[in-house]
Image 1: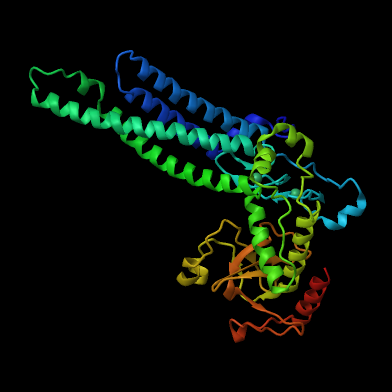
Image 2 (image 1 turned 90 degrees about the horizontal axis):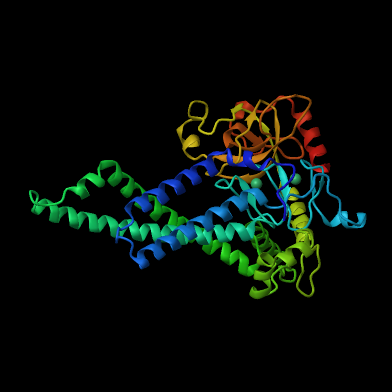
Length: 409
Ligand SMILES: [Zn+2]
Ligand SMILES: [Zn+2]
């Protein structure tokens, strides 16, 4: 495994995700060290502190490795070894190459990522074929480290409270050292760090459970979604049940991720498959799902301009704004008579891709827009889902012609 040559490693840390992660880790570690119960050189206390620091350092090491090693990027313009295999693969327009099996294009990394699991903003990279083992180890050690910090801060806080009470009772003859050492900032930092550790423990636990599930089934987050759609498609079309090709049994699946020799053998492009499947079982299913989606695509024409705003309160009203889809997909700006190929519908919003003409408009062409801004057009060019009878498109022939050409494309 090598650091990706086309990305400067250190620049990857210059992003809110890694910066916040490192600041939070430094704050919690420093505060836990400050609040560590002082048992004056006791061997057990020192050994326990050394163990805490070891888990923290191991989590940091795996965090840094997850960022620097990266998920494994498919080279731009990638082609399969044998040209005849290209028909079983999807093509990535952005990277101008084919997508290898288990590869997906990440919008944020703007690259095709091998065995892509998900894009993690905290490491500012995708989790994929080559950094998944580091990522899982990071989650494990970070969970362990924060569990310790949480326990220690809780214990030290309670002890401080009890001791302070005792001191207050015999105020005049008592030792005020505790009050001086644990002044306001220290208490504030202790409470804040305790809150942070609880939040981190819950998040890490959830992420780790998801990752272990994915590890044991050898199925990434993206693949789980494809398999769910495959099961539904095969059931509806009365086809043989879909067999996920990469689930070799939990032991072999673990080896796929943690056995470095195995990783080098597969190079992130071809993976061992179960009997009855081949390298293209999943990619052919993806192509079939895409074809189905194309057939389901509806063409809409814009009848009211859309601003591309996330909360279009002024232009669309409160109901549309408050029902904005809870996803980070872009919102698209539309002008009257724009054509849009719609693939998803919600009550107040539609998701689709604007048909790009000669105009050189800036901004996203694929995303959500308010449903009342457009009407569906049938082959004859008649608006079906009229939002307003006054808003009939003037240029029906253009819409109709473009609709037909879209379907051919
Ligand atoms: Zn790509
Ligand atoms: Zn990514």
